Amino acid sequence: MKAINPYDGRPELLPKSNGIKKYTALGNPDKLYCDTDYCYVNDRKIKKEIIKETPEDMFTFLPPKDQFMKEFRNPCWKGKDLENEEKLFCIPYLYIIGFTKCGTTDLFAILKNHTHVSSRAGKETHYFDRLRRGRIIRMNRKPTRLPVSFLSWSNGGKYRQNLLSTYRKDPDSDILFHGITMDATPSAVWDNEFWEIFHPGYREPPVTNADVIATINPDTKIIVSLRNPISRMQSAYQFFCAFHVYQCDRPVTPEKFHNLVAQAVQIFRDCRKTNTDRGCVYSTESHQLATHLYASIYSVYIADWLKAFPREQIHFMMFEEHISDEISSINSICDFLGVSRFPVEYMRTYLEQHKVRNSLKDSARIPTCSLKLHNCSENSLNRS
Image (cartoon, rainbow, N blue to C red; front, top):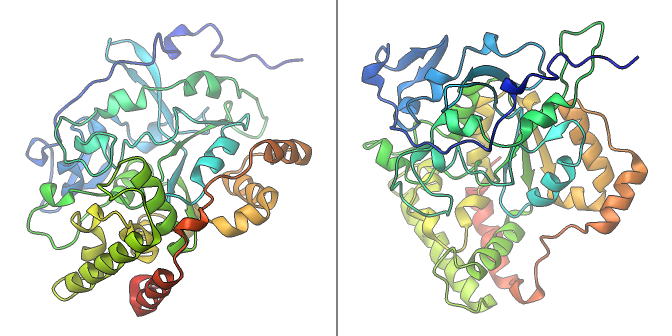
């Protein structure tokens, strides 16, 4: 006998539309109950620095963690939307946070085909790295507008229908809806650009995206995709220059890239004379370089995410290992997420039809430049 879904016929839990975008002010610790370093909102202890760079409704609208609905595996709660109607609000169970040009698009495409994984929206929502600070989605742009409200963001997408379709009643569990939602924004791991505007006087960012997501839900699961840092940087240079993200002298050539790498390495070394490695890596000035050198210094960013989350909640995927045995790689990710594995025949058919992109043209491979970067890495750019 088919189990009865208790949410059938409950239109108040389904959106009438994709929601209404709403912009709001940044948080003000002076309006909250705070001590010297922390504010206390809805049973959460929140660093004052987080409050200053997030929408004012992020933690006032978000309920205490123990009020997430027990019948959902994914963190969800009921609240009033912008039209004052009761809706189901959810935040991601899983974040694919990066790194850029490390196969995250293909990973996202595979996972969103799982019956128990909802994408909430398209890839690269950029809420935590950009929109919450009043930046636009396009990278390297200063905050020029009010931040997107947390209420609006948590009310968007078609994930509700997807979650409600995963109803299954188990005698040994209170969970009725076993689906999970994900957000895949591969710049979230490194993009804290223009943090200096929110935290003047600091040599390093006092908080990062990792701290914000962990404060919202400390049980969040994280996937980090890594790649040979030199190959990743070459791929990023080729991609971002082609799409006019950086002001590049097109067409890209090995010689041009070599000269830009030499410049970027020297800028980083000069920075380290007066600042810390972490301060130089997060420096917004360094992020304007077309070489994308800063995003290949993995150890600095990973250290911050490991401070925010337990090691068992972070899954590291090596891009080179992933493309050599994708079925085993996806199986390990499914196990990490606690969802069933894809049938082997399904995966074989899917992978045959969807070859992994992210290949690098031979014209962009630069042996002498790679040697320079390797030597730079040996001198602590990629400390473990």
